[in-house]
Image (cartoon, rainbow, N blue to C red):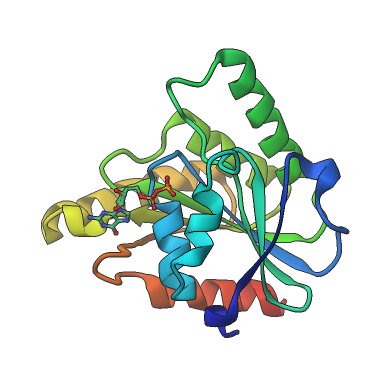
Length: 196
Ligand code: GDP
């Protein structure tokens, strides 16, 4: 697929407001500041996509982008904001869990984690939900350019090792929007999910 022609379709406050559950969706999830917007920008070669998601008031929404008819990328709300009230966090979590467990057209999940702070509680929760729902997961260790190659490799190996515990289809790769690391692997994975 040509991800460069991706365009914004709509935002939804929760899964009940998403468009019809048809076609194929791949969702992007991560703690806020993990580099999700940058990754979507890099993949699609567009600055306007991330701006859409970062528009104040839209950050807590599910944002949907269309690659082609029936082929969608879904930008899930960033989680882990310290300043957000507990009640609101629970609400988000419930919405994320609901989406991962109930959305029929969801065929893959990309979880983005800062390579220096991987596998936080909610990251693990997201992967667990996906594995439970038999949805394959691609973990991207973002901002890989921030580490020297030795540290980068050992962090990759550590997360790969830890991911075996999920007992599911979980692939872990390095990623950098800045240095364009891992972009081809992301594209290949999306292609495979969108063609299944
Ligand atoms: P989001 O909140 O997950 O959407 O994260 P953003 O994409 O907005 O990125 C958060 C911060 O990390 C920004 O200051 C980005 O410039 C920075 N960042 C994102 N990707 C990279 C990367 O590949 N390398 C480096 N060095 N910084 C990055």
